[in-house]
Length: 544
Image 1: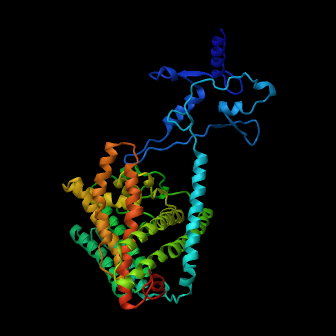
Image 2 (image 1 turned 120 degrees about the vertical axis):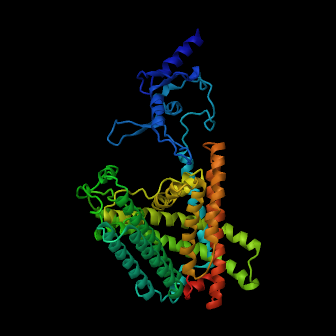
Image 3 (image 1 turned 30 degrees about the vertical axis):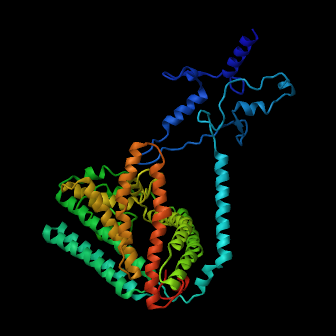
């Protein structure tokens, strides 16, 4: 009789919430008998889980941390109150609530860290991990400064006579890029009016765009001694080349496909009212071309999504964050990467080669700082700088990247990491190859080859050396694509592909590329200037 009373009491307790109000239950069809009846709160949890966004192909499923606290609106500040039974037991409202004979073990329950535990919440452990990460990295930077001193101060004291605006070859290269933009507009205007034929016009487009790129490469190779100025010009020349290719390719399709411009505009949301009736050749104006040339995109279209106005508070906020992030990145490079490269340079000075032990040591020491610099550079360019350009130009589509950090396949990383380049490659390289009968695998190889060539041009030319490490690195992504796709299909939802991605990029790939380029550039700089350490090279004509 006492057992039946306790069972009925536990049942009545399970049917009431913490306030003593009855709690409705909802049956789950097809569920095990022990969990077919659940409370309304649990049912809401299931509804929340169903509404969660599902993982995209090639990315990890989300890990959801759901707090077991609910808001109570008894006051304006919404006190947070636990719904846990254990929390209720440990905070009795009356002194007679816990007689000595009260049973403390009332049901069969699994341990909190077991798989079958409900409402697992590891937020406190995440806070602990963040504290440990912060302290450990601060200790590493402190040890580095105690060992090598404040390297940034030594570089600031050097005779750095280079200034971007006063460097005549760089200014000449910038002017040449604008000349190519004006020539592109003139050729497209003649094509849109029928002044010149289609074949002649496309030939002139190709000649103009490629000659501008070759002139920029020549200026960097023969006249710019500073790698910093060379990287700036090559980046802008590459971006301009890709933009003008897209401009001519898209307008050729508008001109020859016979598609209705209104159908194209119907696919674009948030278009300015002034652009609703835009059609080819009305779009062929110098203002339209220059808007596209400055916009944070590489793919031209007849109209772009636009925002209603410029939010100047956001502009100033982005400028402030850009300044702080740039300072932090310069500190990381000078204080945590250059000293480790100097360690490798000492071996080069003594033996003329780097020992395997030193290479492995420097590689591991570079892994963490390089990862930080890479992530900071990503945040600086893809989030801050591109959002700044978009805000000033009222450019609406600001999905410049997606959740590449969840990639379970290498191919997913390259699709999500840099959306402007991804859009350009699939629109102007991949699908044109497919339409010509190329297989998808060969088209993928062509895409990686083109990307590798441009990576090599941007890195090698400013440092005045003929190298191939970036191209090899890009082509080495192809077998990794197949390997990670195999693991993703074999073990769906697992982290194997994501771990391969992080290890190959942050532990092996990028630190090894830095070492290989640093060795070649040290040899080049030693031949011309006789500089010893990397920090000394930064102060001479060969800046790292």
